[in-house]
Image (cartoon, rainbow over all chains, first blue to last red; front, side, top):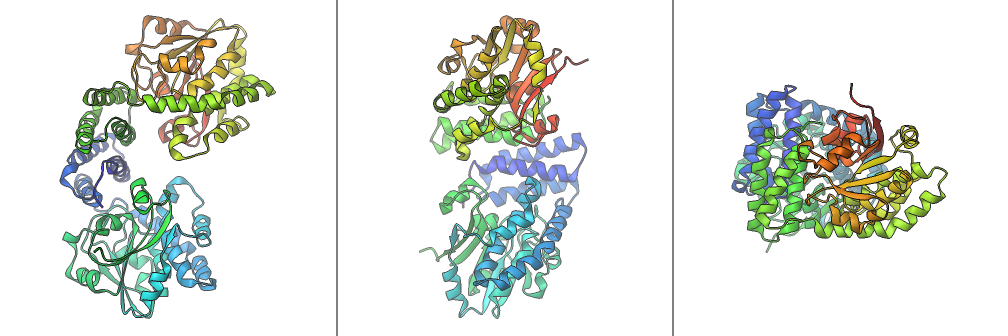
Amino acid sequence: MKLTLECLPCLLRQSLEATRLTTLDAGHEQAIMDAALACLSDYKRYATSPQLARAIHRRIQQLTGSADPYREMKLTHIQAALDLYDQARARVMASDNPLLTAVKAAAAGNLIDAAIYADIEIGQAILDRLDQPMAICDLDALSERLRDAKTILIIGDNAGESVFDRLLAEQLHPAAVYYAVKSQPIINDATLEDARLSGLESCTRLIESGCDSPGTILEDITPEFADLLWHADIVISKGQGNYEGLSDVPRDMFFLLKAKCPLVAGHFGVPLGSDIFRYQAKPA
Amino acid sequence: MKLTLECLPCLLRQSLEATRLTTLDAGHEQAIMDAALACLSDYKRYATSPQLARAIHRRIQQLTGSADPYREMKLTHIQAALDLYDQARARVMASDNPLLTAVKAAAAGNLIDAAIYADIEIGQAILDRLDQPMAICDLDALSERLRDAKTILIIGDNAGESVFDRLLAEQLHPAAVYYAVKSQPIINDATLEDARLSGLESCTRLIESGCDSPGTILEDITPEFADLLWHADIVISKGQGNYEGLSDVPRDMFFLLKAKCPLVAGHFGVPLGSDIFRYQAKPA
């Protein structure tokens, strides 16, 4: 999915958020925003939004000396998710269709980062989603492929929602489930440490993707990740950033995400904010 | 109220909106956004958000040849408001406190521009607001000053909500009510023509403020507007843009607005989206 002009105001808002997380000094904030605006003005150099975001956040990291401005926020999100985990797991286990409920939980977990700032009653909102239909849910395609699947790759997204991805991973056994995280901190995406704190080691094999952008960029991936991306029996890509980077790659894939921007919602033909689990066949 | 870094992503989003309204050519869109980003990067030259917004939108007007990109949108908003006017007026007339209900209507009218895009059932949302308490409502201060008031200045905001301002103006009689509009089109702010289409000539004397920014900038005002601003018995400033320009001027004033941005909401100590009618005494 290509970078569009609609990405620019969003990326600038995100730059300001990162700036505010790293400094309290007004003059320094201006200097960082000046640098972010300079990167942003150069948007034509970048093919996708995650690539431009990476350039901006690298610059912010350089100027603030903070390699992980979102560290505290991520820990808060992971703890909030862990506090909900037992309840959510009980709902999955008691469900008529545990696989479906686990897919819903893995999508709903994405509410955490939106919710904490918008002052939503996050716990209830996430649990409520487990009873609601998803806007798109290609569950049959997953069930069918699960029968013969030996290796499965989940490409993770944010810290916090990572906790709910455990519920999904457990439903995918006995296949070997690999869970890919970012190789370096970028915004609130999960890293290896975040995945461990989320408890994902108990049910997946953790790997780094090689990427340090808020989305998978093929140029950056490690040989191990590439091997899984191309040869795993099932690939489940989580979140908007990974969709933006992977929507055009030549293999079949499941995209599991909340449509947080009007363009992505438009791509899927669903209302903004919808939960989506879409099977995309290998492009012809 | 000073320009802050928080204004920048918002102004960029608004620039894109104006760009999309004026051209369908992708290359031209990029050229306009490049110019908007160049203006935005120069943000330290501007004291307030309306001043920076004016600079950006003047540049967009230059590059597109469109003096009024929002013309059609404004007409749609005015018509939507006119369709609601009789119902809203009946509610004011039947109210136990018509002045209060009219104040609420003048604030709720500001929902129109948000609503049309967010797909809210706008008519019902506006009418519902007439029964709800405002977050801040200094009605007693208005009632008290109305007893002796001979001249009143309402400083208008958007086209569309202008229709609901008629309800307020009628409640302010028998004082002479002046209604100020922008001298040139800027975003979706009401101009003389918009005010006429809104029916405001029937109950106010229309004047131009001299401004062509989304907010009142003292350097630009006409002698006639200045005379009213400083000597009218009551001044009611509508909307965020006028608040940003007038919050520090040395006279007492009523601010009637919806808090659409976190900073303005923070200034008033109310949740985002609140309706506010605040009497501000002359600063010491």
